[in-house]
Length: 572
Figure 1: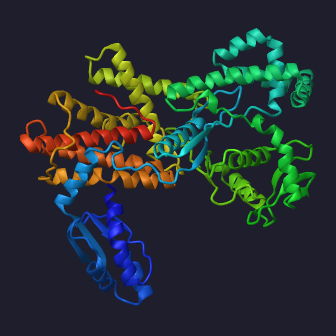
Figure 2: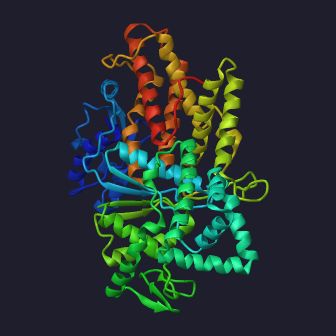
Figure 3: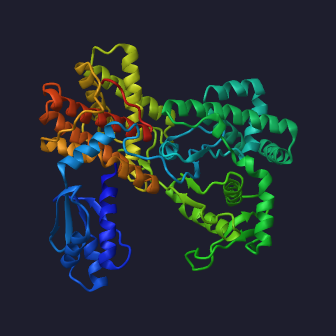
């Protein structure tokens, strides 16, 4: 049961009667009561009446007796609502028997495409790929759980002029040796060696240029060597995804090359629609509202002067395929904030062309950067990009060492399992608990702390709940009568009933720090409940009631963390 929605549904007709039309009651949690509505203040100017008078009239029309113990006007015109203990207990009892914890499957499922991760072939994944992969995977998990038809798309960089030098370097090494080198995961070494030869050797550079022509022309041997590079890179990417514990699979790879056959039609159709104009020899679209610093229209280069296609053409072809062939109505692009203008222009041109029409819409889920201790972009000691596998390995090693120090009785396998869950969880949670549009500092001590807004704190809260049931030797009874005798019990019950509203909001905004913040508040409420309300030492109905509250908290923490892509453990 979504308590916030219930109160909204009860107040909305009363506000409509008073205002003479629909009004959002704007119900939210309150420090002065359980909930409050601020809508009367916003209505005052429109109706020409004092807000307290409006709020009083709303209460006269609202049906709240079966839900609220008190409903009163406060301050300049707030409506303060305190939920009746009996109603609160009944709603918690309803959650106890609900596998979905009050969160319904959507009544209007959509086909949603989530474009995320997107590494480049023949290059290792670095820390810059972490945010797209983690945020995108959380979006997939959440929308899938709500019943949407979710399509993952891993838009690989697998085409373009660099492949000429890469394939030539591969032929110099020999296929067998190159395959062995690539299979060991040293993609950066392979790429740098090719780049060094390209920069230093004019003959190699000319061979690389001719190899690009052969690749684009469909030469059979060149295409076979290119596929070898792609396949070896994909194997490496899958090992990283397995370590990071994300849902991406080999079936989700869809490289830029997959759209090659569609690029000509994109240009031809944009030209037919009158959306292309020449600019310095290139074919460009000029969507309205985009200008440069000098005020002149900003071009989106669809086809370059040399006849080649740039990223805009590929992105337009991909968008057209997703709305046209897949029937997607929600397109999510999880790409860093520096690409904000690019995607805004692509979406605008697609709209002009009729490839992005309601109900279909596209959203750029931009994100900030990960910073090092010096407040600058995170770098390795040598000054280069930090490899993602190295970052993840360090997180697991640190978490495993902490697990052994905290609980020396753990055997090696159990310590490794806890270390992986806690280490990878800490990395993901630090990312998702931050407003995605902001940069954040990679701070190992804070990320792995067992207190504060961290994954280990939430995982520890879950493990503590599991230990209660191990000692109890019994499961919670879903049919137990809920008693809310203590303030800490009541506060925990209110928090549990807020899960559905948070999930609904995050599904709309995809601001996962809101879900992380809710889980932290829930764990904090449980900690206060655990300290002040003995569970196993309570008797009879009170014991059964507190076991239900503990069980609901554990289930909600586990489900919420799962939506963020974070594992729980039975003990720590």
